[in-house]
Image 1 (tube, helix red, strand yellow):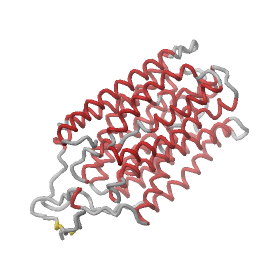
Image 2 (image 1 turned 120 degrees about the vertical axis):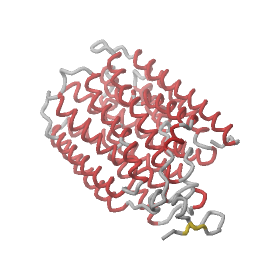
Image 3 (image 1 turned 180 degrees about the vertical axis):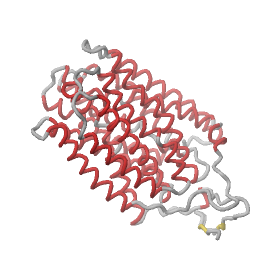
Image 4 (image 1 turned 30 degrees about the vertical axis):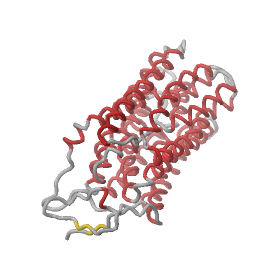
Length: 432
């Protein structure tokens, strides 16, 4: 039976099953809050804490593997573990986004949680100096679980929010910053104490188990699948793939992602190699990620007022410029200044609202964000290993990866500027 939605202008609209069951965004009422809406956001925050937060903590594993359990491997080869993990997190969006749009949210969240938790416990069984075990459990297994979980968790907020969508996505992404503060502190202390690697990983896994079970119970979709019924029309994939401003924006964001995570992967190694005090070697990554907490929410809050493009472009430009400052973080003051300032601005470079702003109706949100994250994943896959290779250990020539990542991020800002101009001409507005 056709459903009735109350448009924002107050008039009731009946979906016609004769043409399509697609409901344009303009004809749907979004509650912009309520108990279930914020409960879903809270559950999503827990998922992002466990997934994106864990990835941003890989610098601790990078340092531990380099010094202890995989000491015979090069930094570039070790970084492939984290790069493959983050690749799957973003690449999985092309599949999980489409399945989310088709109404399989519950199955995705449960299945992704199961794969992720199984893989985390398998990582605790990895034998030192057996690279493939760490790669399969942490890189492939955990990465695939994250890829199934991450995109539906972001997309489901679009069922409850429209005007506040950027702010809500910012709140969700603060979960990654909080997780990226908590995990490095936990892991550093557990790995370097009598607890050791195996039980340290298991303790983290039990925390993940609690959070993901709770999140599965809290999150709930509100709208029916975007496409249903005998006369339903599929998502206009061709229209999305020929949307030139959208494709240029994706390329720009991919370039930004290609370089922006290099400091996250190597900052603890940088602190150790420059003989900074122990507290900075332990907490530099956590400070960087703590600053990202504000960088996640402040830019997207502003983007709701001025448009996502008008925020992400200057934030990406500043992030690219700040990467050069990494070279000066060789003392306590320099390291603290870099971690705080770069953490804030790099946090705003994660931009799902930018992709969502191209959507013509709500049923496209998951697919567009999924396509964006899929393309982004290839930049994330190769960026950190390339930086590890041109670092040239054991000499550690830090100038090479810094210039590489900074130029790549600044190039991304350039392409985002081009995409914004094209979209502004098409829409006839500067609110982008």
